[in-house]
Image 1: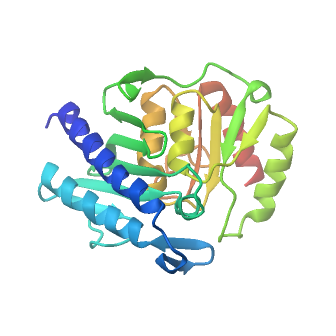
Image 2: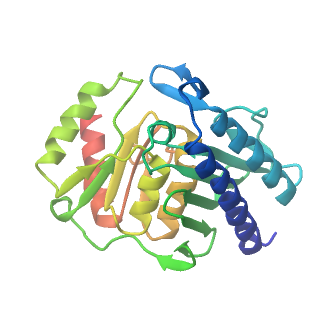
Length: 262
């Protein structure tokens, strides 16, 4: 299997679906928005995008399995499994904010071997394959060289429907507000992680995330020279619903804090 050829096909497919998403944003009406759960929304654009991605990815690797957010196909694990978020940042999308992404990862058995994140509005495609380097629009990217929290710019996501760890989160947030250059919250974990990979952010942490939120972005971070883990420093960040990521120095300090506060 030639992963370099496959990533080219995946990126082309993602851009095609991205064009559909951009066209539909201006046509969206209030009646198109459905609430899946507390503050958790979906539109026909999410579902149609997912269907388009499933069709295209199934042609790239016939017989592959899928883990997808909107469940337009039964989630099944195969030797090769696509982990797909067709529209990461739906709330931004429905409010007209320009920060939302298509996130696609490929797993072989239990290991991610490819990741692609398209920042739809910006037209930036971040991607990497196992054993290779990380790129944005064919230009190699690397994590930042800042080595302390004191000189870092961080990203996070505010809990919007899972408040079980809100107290711990706010305590850590208060500490970091006084300990780094700034904290940003853009509403798309896939983009946050991609911006860690290219050095715009120095670190990222969030809880209550699903595999399709982080699979591609975390892989790109690691291929760009960064580190990812769960809050305790282990490797259960793909399905463990918590992640901390960054370059080596900032990751170390940030992970120590997640281990302490959570």
